[in-house]
Length: 91
Image (cartoon, rainbow, N blue to C red):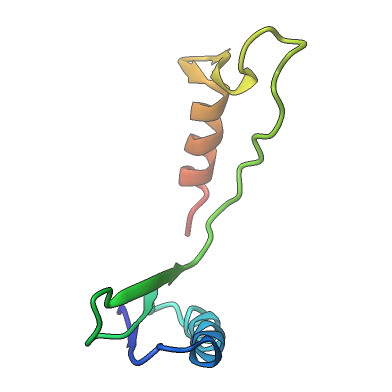
C-alpha cells in the first residue's frame, strides 16, 4: 500500500504530513508514503519509506592509500559484503 497525502502545499501542511507519514509507516502493509499536491506542476514532493540500514562510510582512507570500502573481502568488497549482510537480515 502506498498512501498519497495530497494538498501538501505549505510548510505547516508539510510538517503535519511528515508526522502522518511516520505514523503510517508503522503499519507493515504500508510500503511508502507519498507527500505532494496533485494539481501542481510538481505533484510529488517527498517519498517516505522505512530505513532498513544506515551504512556509515565517512573518511578519506588516507592511511590505507585507497578507499577502504572497495578493499577485497572474500568474493566481493567490504561494501559489497556489508550490503549483502543488510539484504540477508531484512524481514
